[in-house]
Length: 227
Ligand SMILES: [Zn+2]
Image 1 (spheres, rainbow, N blue to C red):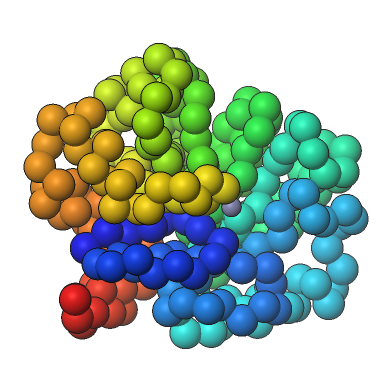
Image 2: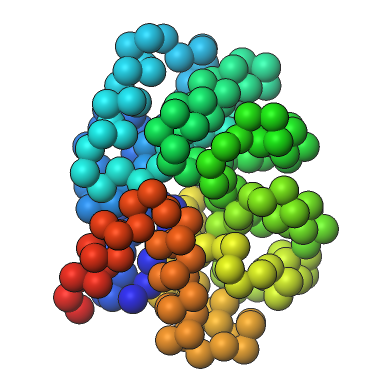
């Protein structure tokens, strides 16, 4: 079974499960979802109503984490506004004791700092494509990484994929849909010289462990899926 750790639309290719990230208040098209205010589309600190919509979504079946939320230096409102919105969602994740799915573009130091100050639950930066030095710094802070391997990757990203510890990472398809999640498992397995079966087991366990607070439900749900 392939698990797509982060995507925004349901494709459901064969032998796959998708964790879909939806905007708060929107119905998830899949069984498992995360929800949060994305820095591209949120321009002011969350109102009481917006915060309530997010809290309510978290009570729904299949909810796994807050996010994606985070910081983007290239898009969205000024970084200080993004930080206020991010902190509101970090605090909600702390209250719910659930993980946080983080979007981060050129604000890695800020994310590491705020994680140290306020983060009390597991965090993952999704769509990570940077070098292994930065990857190492984030992992040292206890932040997991989700990656989307593809063909003809730049050397720095390939090195990152060769270096990443197998127990702190996930595979995803977000923002680039030309390859299926199965293709990405294949590319990753070849790069790390492991069997696809082994990769399936590793990522299954990583996902269940990362979402500890829903682990039993997730394990039962995934095991009940018939292929
Ligand atoms: Zn995304």
